Amino acid sequence: MTIDDIKELIRVVQETGIAELEVRRGENSVRIKRSASGSQDVVVPAVLPVPVAGVAPPVASVPAATAQDTAPPPAVTPPAPPAEESRDVIVKSPIVGTYYDAPSPGAPPFVKVGDHVEPKQVLCIIESMKLMNEIEAETAGTLIARHVENGRPVEYGESLFTIRPA
Image (cartoon, rainbow, N blue to C red; front, top):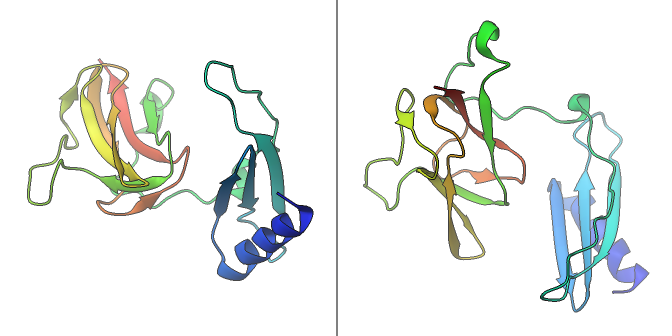
């Protein structure tokens, strides 16, 4: 991937207003992420080699957005009371894709606010590149909030659910 290719990708990100773009070509990968604050856009490109099967991928450091740079997603349910917040577990999206709360259209949702969940229980599906990825609970507890609407795109690290451990 040439520097001109990267400049073109940055231009596309700035013109379209998308929050993040990742492109892989051969052994190269570039991720371009926009800042959500102010009128001045900050674009941080990072070129990473694609790992070869059986070899641990190198970890590259990309400046993370600060809390003031990111806007919280709209909450579908009210937030938990502040006294219990520190114990609550936030389930975040491990990938970019489309959030679905049921296995198929018209089917009942995997979980509802107030349900008790167990580890390995499917909470939702995120469709990414035509693949359906089941997102499972990692802890037992009560589902106290759902932060995403059905059919809405989600980004990596976006909060999906809040679980209050049992």
